[in-house]
Length: 250
Image 1 (cartoon, rainbow, N blue to C red):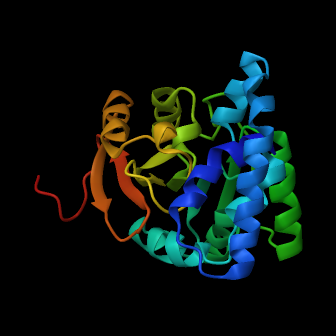
Image 2 (image 1 turned 90 degrees about the horizontal axis):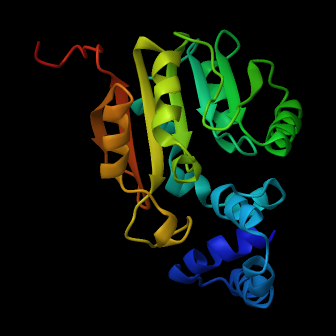
């Protein structure tokens, strides 16, 4: 809980909250973060690093605000990645499965979604959500460090939403993902703009799209396109270096 409060209280302060009930909730979070901040500072270094890097599963509810569909725009993201009925996709850093269930509905019973995360508690939360939704086309996949442990040459698309800034070794992760996608597969990296504002982690924890592009080049990937329709986030579409888009010059 401490990690979520300290990491996201700054960003809540950037937003204009007009609903009195929301002001009360956000105010309580801000007060709690101030009162409990000393506990985080006094924690052992390894525990502090874990709080700073990974979002605690017990606090996933803070990330699932009623307006997330409006600013996350999952249907547009899936359209841009070409995700359709019968697609095989992976949700890397799936967390509680917010995006996973939307992917599962899109690909339908003939498709498959791998919900991947490195936290056992996160995958437990995803499994509960899958059961509640009555979905049978989702597989929970436990990763190890920066290795998502995905099957090779299987995926039409891999999605990394709101998780890239938490990855310890980003080049290693992208190298594994490059091996997991098919030759025509697309990789979507969606993360928070470095300028701040809106939801997301503190500005000093954000990763710029230029850094993602550099990481991708080192991992044998390139940026095919950058979408600009998200209000608080950037969205890069990566492909393997041997990928040839139909509309690209040869």
